[in-house]
Every structure is written in structure tokens, then in C-alpha cells.
Length: 57
Figure (spheres, rainbow, N blue to C red):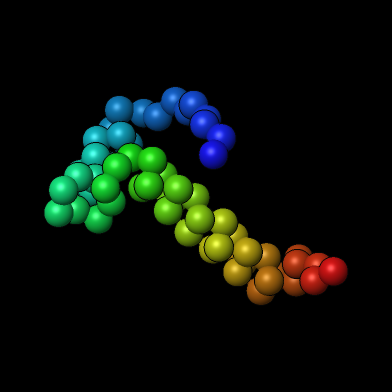
């Protein structure tokens, strides 16, 4: 798996950390970020489909 590095504002990281940890939604930051990316890309695909911008080749 490829590793990337990103800069994140402190307030966004604090919000993320509120959802990460034992008994919370995500087990670690990486899983939270991957889930967020997947969800965002799925939403963008849905928007593109509604707007007729997806080519099903």
C-alpha cells in the first residue's frame, strides 16, 4: 500500500480524532481517512452520473 503525506489543519485533525479510537467509529486515523476518501469519491461519481458526465466505456 502506498503511503502519502498531507498537511491537515489542527481543528480538522481534532475533529477526526474525536471519531478515532477504541469504541469509536474508526480504529485509527488511516482507516478514517481512507473511508472519507472512498465516500467522497462515491458522492462525486453520483453527482457526475446525475449530470451526465460519466462515460461508461
